[in-house]
Image (tube, rainbow, N blue to C red):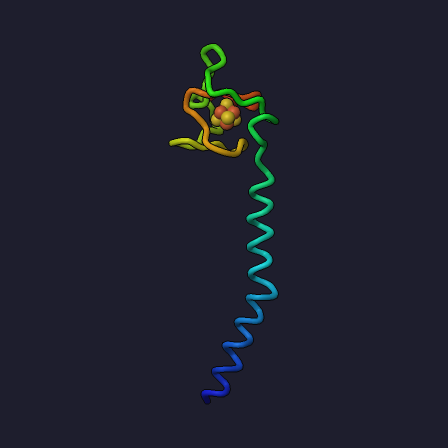
Length: 85
Ligand code: SF4
């Protein structure tokens, strides 16, 4: 019985090692590379006229963005700005 449990645990471990962990790493890598860098987006820490990250649908409070990586200011702006309706 204990030997059977040991085989099952090994199978679960090997399955995770072969299938689960690489998949998780790929997902994490894809998610990281999906975002633009600040220079690519021509991000600036100041508004563009009346337009600012706080008014963009892509802003993620308190200091993130769905499409630009890094810390994003509510008062910033970039060329991917998408106004809230
Ligand atoms: S203006 Fe650019 S950096 Fe700011 S929230 Fe929108 S997409 Fe992100």
